[in-house]
Amino acid sequence: MPRIDFYVLPSGRRPVIEFIENECPDEVKGKVFAGIKDIEEYGTKLLHIKPGTVKALGEKLFELKIYGEDKCFRFIHAYVSGNTAVFLHAFIKKRQKTDPDDIEESRKRLKKYMAGKREK
Image (tube, rainbow, N blue to C red):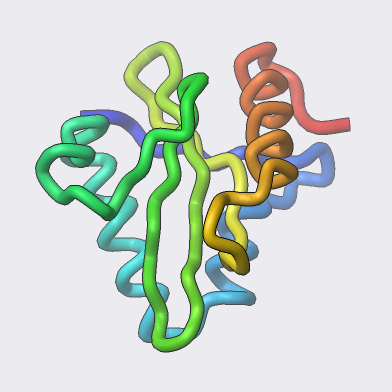
């Protein structure tokens, strides 16, 4: 069972937590926390247990998919050493494919997380 962590900016802000608080309607927040709990409980097995909930993006990155009434919410996370799932980036999906900029932002944050640094 992975431990859950959230990427922290140099200012101390946690962008994924702020996204959940500010961008997700109340009915979606419960789904988000249930999805995070599933990741905490099942880790990468979730790909097979609940297909469609999590998608592999490659290079250690995964996307948790949460559907609202009229929007799709995405949470990019990675599994890192010590059996930790770190949530790196969150956004409202607007295209069929995940925007390469969102994936690149997540890669940068993962690299900094792994190096033990905060975003500069």
